[in-house]
Length: 166
Image (spheres, rainbow, N blue to C red):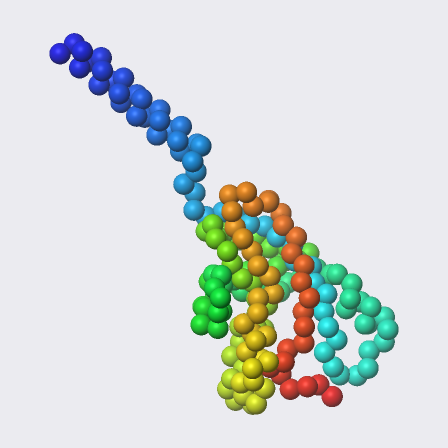
């Protein structure tokens, strides 16, 4: 009986210590906060002939300021994949979000619009448009080792789902 009085508390303390220690070493945290800065360059997409300065400014990296980025879970085919989350960058192109560990595709908001109806159907139902909409602008892999601030760079191409500009 005395043996049980000594052994049971020792076992309970051991189980408690193991549980607390394993929680520190093997984090069960499923969501991580990701902070990123988005920098872009972009194509000239028609209209009046631009000046050389305008063309050069489009080639120069700039913050993707005050814009919406749509996040989808990584798949081989994104066409049927719903938007998981929308994030908005600030005036410096910086965003912060919380996501579970995993791989994600990031799309500019324009790519998630439906171009297959109405006056846009002529261009929105083309293979070129579908390919453009189904190609992520960025990929994001969330791991326990993800940096506190990541810089994302991408190039915005002209939207083939819209009619050409004069």
